[in-house]
Image (cartoon, rainbow, N blue to C red; front, side):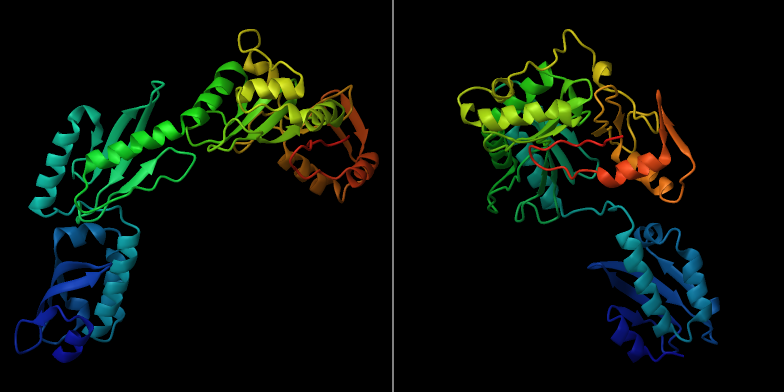
Length: 385
C-alpha cells in the first residue's frame, strides 16, 4: 500500500478521495499538459485489479499502449511505482501522437477571425477545422503564386505564429503583440519581391533548358543540373541574394568532353556580366547553346545506367561517365561502388555491360589506377573502363 503523502509527492494534483486511500482523482501532468484521471483500488490494494478512468483526450493518446499499462499494473509493487510508469508512458505517447485539437480560449478565436476579416478572406487559401493552421496566398509582381503556412499557438497574438515558406533563404517575421495577420502578409509580400530576380533567373533556366535535377524544383531549390549534351551536364548552385553573379559550377561527364568546357569557364570568367541574365552569361562564358526544349526531348539526355539498367536509383540519376570516346556509357556512382566491392575477390569473372566485354583482372587494375573522382567545383566526374 502506498501512503497518500507519497502519492501527493509524486503527483501533487492527484488527491485522495477517501480515508482508506482506495480512490484518487485529479490530474497527471505530461509534456506541460494536465490530464484528468481517476484511480480506484480494491480493498486489498492489488494493482492488478485496479480501475483507471481518464478523459477521452488521454484515452486517445494512450491508444495502443494499453497492453503496456496492464503489464505495469501487474508488475509494479505499489501505486506510486505505477504512477511513475504511467507518466513515462504518457510522455512517450505524447511525443509520438499528432497534435490533438484542444479548444483554445474564446478570445483566441475572436481575435483570429477578426484578423482574417481585416486581411480579407480572398487572401486565405486554407484554414484547418481547429483554427490552428492558416495558409495565406500571395502573388508576386510577375504573377507567381506563393503560400505561407502559419501555425498558431494558444497565446496568439501575444506570441507570433510559426511561419513556413518555400524560400531559398530564411524568412523571419518581425512581431509585436499588437501585430496581426495583415502584418505577416505584408512582410511576406516584401520578401517575395526581394527574391524576384532569383526566381526570374531560375524560371528562365527551367523554361529554356533541359533540367535533369531536381526533377520538380521547388521555389526554395538553388541548384540546377542542366543538360549540355548526351551524358554531359553542368550543375550550378545559385546565390539567391545575388542570382546574376557567377554561380558555383561543376561538370558531369567524360573528361574528354568536359575538360574543354572547364577550360572555357576558367578563361572566360572575366566576361561574366551581372547586368545580363544568368542563362545568357552561362552561354557566353561556356561558348555553347544549351539544347533547346523545342527541338529535343528530355529522353535524349536520360540514358540508363550501364549496370542497373535504370535511370533513377533511390532518387539519383547517373553521374559517372566512361571516359572512352567510343563508349560514353553513364553509371550511378553507387552501382560502380557495388561493382568494385563485388570484384575485390573475383579474378576469374568477366564483366559485361552493353557492348563491352572486359577482363576483370584488367578492370581491377583500372579501378586502382582511376579511382572515383571527388566532385569539386569546376571539375568533372568520370570513371574509366
